Length: 140
Image 1 (cartoon, rainbow, N blue to C red):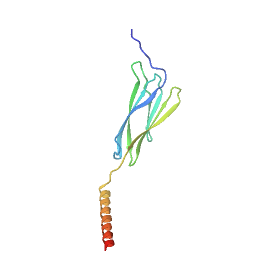
Image 2: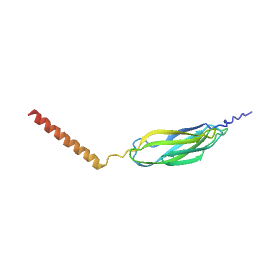
Image 3: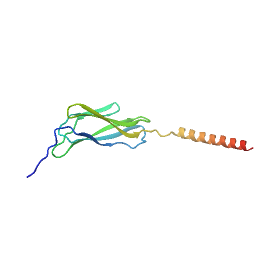
Image 4: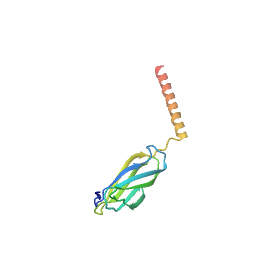
């Protein structure tokens, strides 16, 4: 005899994984994947946002075979020094909206340009020259 266990008639929603680029990426477009899971048999709506860009969709629901899962692909239009934060909102079992912010710690960072690098080294050489001249004058 086989016994089937049905999931409870609730929303048991969570974010399982965020596949994001590594810290220090260049500004521009980057793909971000968010894997969500609902262990309950009750569904509702969910919303995933990166900045002002949001995706609304029906929440996955659990079956006797396992939890409901959904992978949402978003595109992060990263600006220089912008940190990747993801807003996740969902309807709970009572139909009330809950939210959570996922702080990934990933920041877009524009590497120094050739002009900035050259300027830094020119400044360092001039500063070193001034220090050497001052040390020679003080020893005289």
